[in-house]
Image (cartoon, rainbow, N blue to C red):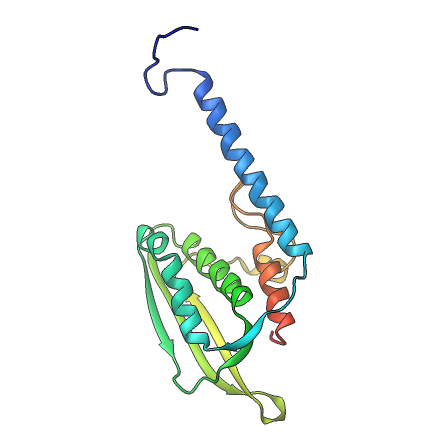
Length: 177
């Protein structure tokens, strides 16, 4: 074998290998998302403070948000009731929505997180969770499709179109909408 060292990036095969590696990771993510979508999974419900969970999830991707120059504004109603939820599934919903918001603001902006107390039918206490960003938004013609599996407005290779479909299913499993 040759002992000559190539300058970094000088080998013409390097770029092809980088593309293969990137696409293999993308396919692994897609398979992971497909499995997540198809698998119901056992619920591990406990009493959850929505504001606290939202704060903890935001902290998980704080580096990603800061790198994108996304500022977080929180408006959490202290009267919002605790809910019975699967903490991991709830975090998955939050993580997906936070990531989508950051993706919609490639040059920075503000993401407002709001938790409000409401009264549901039968006078039961409930919670409304709102994510509002200053990103480019979703074209009105795409709105009816955003929760459909495999529908994405992201550029090729950037989204699987399963994120919001998974979020909707998790919310529905929790009796929400």
